[in-house]
Image 1 (cartoon, one colour):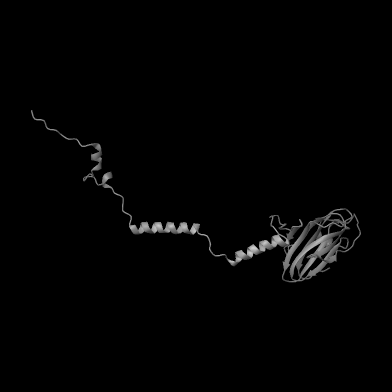
Image 2: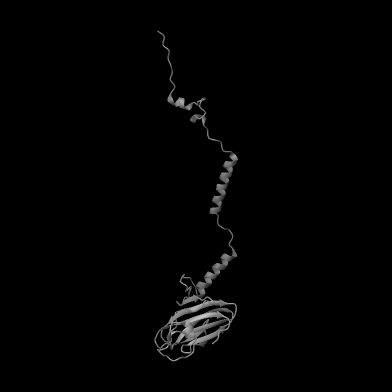
Length: 220
C-alpha cells in the first residue's frame, strides 16, 4: 500500500498570503505612503507652534517700565486709587469717600447728607473742555445749606433759607426754581473737577440734595 501525505498549511500562513483573486482581501490592502516632505512640514509646524507658546519676551517694552514706575509711585506717595464697582459710583479714594463719575448734561444727581458740620460721603468727578454751569439745590424739607468745594477749594455756599416744614418737594427742578430752597450756581472753567460738600445747616439732621453740570448759560 502506498501512502500519500498531504500537508495542510497553518491558518496563520494562509492569512498571511495575499489572495490574487480578491483585491479587497485585507492582506492586499496597504496604507498609502505619506511623502517625506509632508511629514517634515507637519513636524516643523508643530515645532514652531510649541516654540511660540513657550517663548518669553527678551525685550522689556518702555510701556512696561512706565507702568511699573506708576505703580510704585501710587504705593509710595499715597496717590488716590480709583476703582470701578459697576454701580454708577465708579471711583473710591483712599479716604473712603465715594466718587461718582458725573456725566455732563445728564441731569440731576442726588446725594444724601447728615448733621451740620459733616461731610457727605459722595463727591463728583468730571473733566470739561468748555465752560460748564454747576448747579446745586436742596430738596425735600427746606432749610439745609452747604459749602461747595472744587478740587478741595471752597468756591461758594448755597443760599441761606429759613427752615419751613411746609416747604417740601422731592423734585429738584421745582426746588431749584423756588427761593424756598437753598441753591447755588457757578460757572466752571475747562479742566478736571472734583466737587464735594460740607453741611452748614441741617435742621432735620439729615436729608438729600442734588447736583448737575450743564453746557451753556443758566438763568438764575
